[in-house]
Image 1: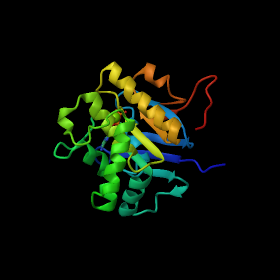
Image 2 (image 1 turned 90 degrees about the vertical axis):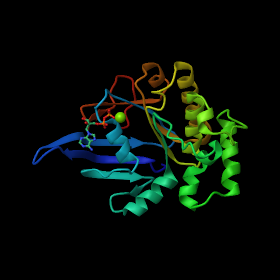
Image 3 (image 1 turned 30 degrees about the vertical axis):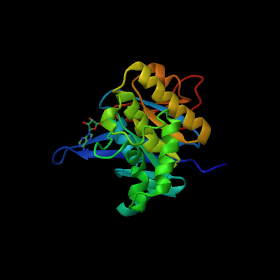
Image 4 (image 1 turned 45 degrees about the vertical axis):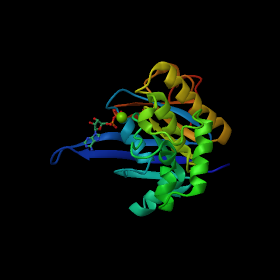
Amino acid sequence: MAEPVLALRGVSKRYRIGTPAEVEVLKPTDLTLAVGDFVALIGPSGSGKSTLLNLIGLLDRPTRGTVRLDGRETGPLSDAELTRLRGQALGFVFQFHHLINAFSVAENVCLPLMARDKRLTRDALSRAEVLLDEVGLAGFGSRWPGELSGGQQQRVAVARALMADPMLVLADEPTGNLDTASADEIFDLMRRFNRERGTTFLIVTHSVELAERCDRHVYILDGQVSEPGPGKKSRV
Ligand code: ADP
Ligand code: MG
């Protein structure tokens, strides 16, 4: 069987909120994501969703437990090695698109490769044009982000997340700031990349309607992760 994209084993996160007070914002968690999974992460505000995504995204280290990405144990890696692995294996979409206004739309899409190659290549720019075409923004490459609608900006953010051909895309409330029609479009786009490329997605959403379009539902409440439900296949 193929190596899971992601395997968390006993992963927890504590924050020190005073001395000696500590709070465990993520309880010990096991979670496995297989290649091609399309998973909703659902939980109220403050339940630990972003904490979990930051650990999976190698932006933060767990207090306890192991994070394996593509079979590779990440605990022993240096910060520089984590950054490199993050750039190769992961893509990110946030609630706010975080496009850089001083860069053109195409240059924004190129950012993940610029971070890796330390320069903007002609190859990267032509790949960005292909991705922009795939997200319905053919010909928008030379525009500025500020000229685009909110939904279009988020489509640019999805193209950017796919630029380095990641195995796993982490989307933290990617449609939280959009009207229903734009949210639908963003969701459809992610679904299409999932089907066509086999990219795995973990998507934080508050929308029941959007969550229903995911294959798996992972819940989190007060830092406790569960994947329950009669008739739902649990792979935790
Ligand atoms: P969500 O994304 O589900 O809204 P978060 O993961 O952002 O939740 O936060 C979970 C809990 O952890 C919250 O109670 C939050 O206040 C707390 N928290 C998050 N980051 C820190 C931090 N750096 N220090 C202390 N507490 C934090
Ligand atoms: Mg959050």
